[in-house]
Length: 307
Image 1 (cartoon, one colour):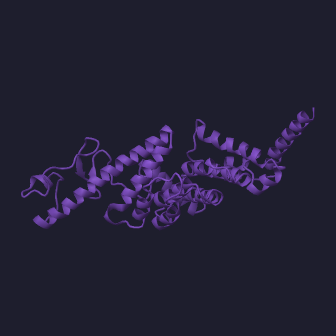
Image 2 (cartoon, one colour):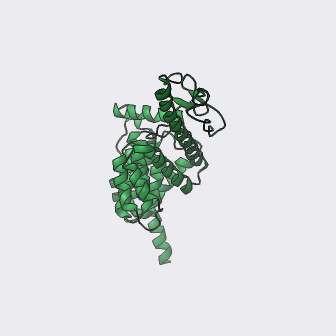
Image 3 (tube, rainbow, N blue to C red):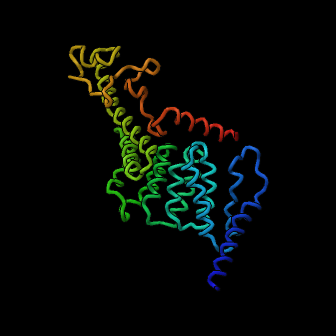
């Protein structure tokens, strides 16, 4: 009887906490959208009545439901950030939500930096967990172009329990962009992210990026051959095939285009590009999809302008 009473009282307190944490929110600005339904982390903690972990689970499920919904997470990074901020304030010793934020909060630079702050909280509460450092390093490198910060974040993870053996080499590559080091760093990050995820959409993005990196690696070899052609013949190539057809040839044969297509000179930039990819790989911003790249830049610009 007493056990039943305690359970009922606990359930009532949790329900009250959920209601109170939402009811005390001030009126949201018109542009806030669904973020208005997420309480401030401190207010949620005060309203939890000691049931911090249970209330945190409630907001965690709301975040998971967004990603799993028909609309998906695209364009909802800031809402997810507010939810995960509440979750990790109520129960900062949770683990996976920190990396969940890193994977899905990529709509714009402000969202990525918010995800970084959440990852830093995760590192503070899980100092021996190398994966939080890995995702934080990836964000600094891939989205923000902050190689030195990425290296500083990753360096302490080298040698941690469970950390992959290549982390030391990755840190070295991040500290030097010479000799194609940055595309090798990108490939290393992406292979690890591919290994960690079961999400088919994320896997497709990472696999596409790895394909682009391989095309970029071969295109850089063609760039070197092009420079040698200029030195030998005193002029630039008019077609990529001239690297093998004009005597004395610089190359015996062109490297295969990874997708079975061909190499061409881009009419706008003059660069050697894959006719399949259509552009050179831009290592510091997600090159998996040109539309997503432009969306990331546009949202970052609007955020900076206070739109």
